[in-house]
Length: 72
Image (cartoon, rainbow, N blue to C red; front, side, top):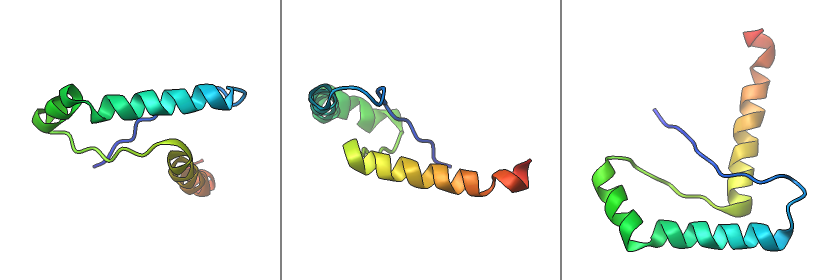
């Protein structure tokens, strides 16, 4: 089983703010402390940032919505 987590901001957030958040998150997940925690947590992570995450999120949304009529 997989789960997904994401960090999102309002659509009108300035590009500069979004870019800074992405850089900060990227730095955090590459930090020694986080890597140490991740290696002992038993959690497998595939980190995807920015537009790449948006594309994956849209694909999941489209898939779920394609089953909407079947689920009622």
